[in-house]
Length: 205
Length: 285
Ligand code: SF4
Ligand code: SF4
Image: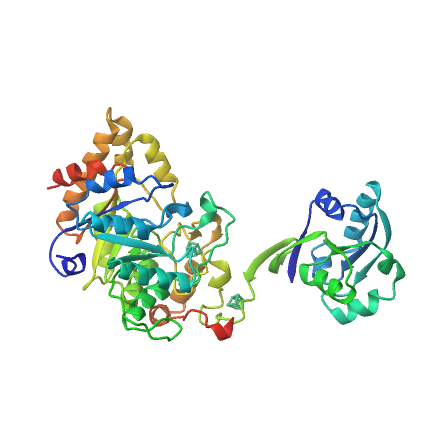
């Protein structure tokens, strides 16, 4: 799912600039799972905005803000949505743009979209995939170096891993050491030696 | 004799490296370079540690004018495949034959944290790209009018564990077309010898990196770098010396003397103290 975090509330207020009337749109998919676009998050930002003199005309939580058909069906008939001078989005950037596309409204994003995350346990997410368009997991033992190597190196590591950790962050495993360990365990080091992954082709972008 | 030809000889090869200036004043660079005229080649770093400096290419050209054979360091960090190939062709046009292909330190640790990193090609892909250009075509499959000739180098880190992974990477880089290697800094020649025994380095030359420790403060800085392990004995010698620079030079000379018995050569990193390199070399004989 898309991992989102809440923006600093002052930043949201600042981005509203002169606009007084707002409508809040949450998202029932990823942002709800992250606790950034659910009922509680909507209530929280509503309270903050009202305390700061804004008029909140209404709010809704869409099933998936990124589904333009649903967004259109659920939103256009709400007159408070139509009347508001700005729409506060508690969704990822795709959700915000979907709502903009179907309504043409002024969008103020209250979340930052971080990455596509796998959930390890509640509240702990890991970035494993960066949606590159040409998956090479079958070549790299199911561990993605495009995403999990800080330099996105496809044919092997740089020289700076230390004790299995990445040069850029001693708390992060070096993706290539992980791949190496798996290859070694499965007696496939020869595959690593012989394999060459080409630069991404234009047609694959 | 050109560096490329020397790689085929039995000569103990000595290279060093220079940092381009941060700004347009090249006087210090030229002064340091003037101390290195007797070396087999001199590397010019490419925005090392992800700092911003004059480009390696311009400074390599200045070295050529001083009759010093330059090694252009080319990091895949900052340039996409168009810029990388263009840089390689530019080097060839200026008469710069030696290129050292590196991925480059990640900007996260440097003064430009948060900048967009490129890494469009990795080191293996970039080594192959240099070799491809020599055949008269580029990565898009287009014909070149006039093809370059390179002497392609790469890096290996003898101290990074697991050693086996570095050894495999070394072999991959050789297979991709690397002709010579320079390594990250080593302090223990016996350990380096063990690493050499583990890798198949026939046909290519490996020049281990040796760093001049100029002060206790500099030693502290070095130790913070990823993968740098300074033996206790060296630390004690530097910390206990009344003239740490002289002691650092002695350590360097001793290391090089030991290397002379089994290594292809040495790559000296003096980090601003290049004027002492001729003396270090003299005392290593
Ligand atoms: S290669 Fe990595 S980034 Fe690309 S699709 Fe596969 S997992 Fe995702
Ligand atoms: S240390 Fe490992 S994960 Fe980090 S940049 Fe180098 S190869 Fe990639």
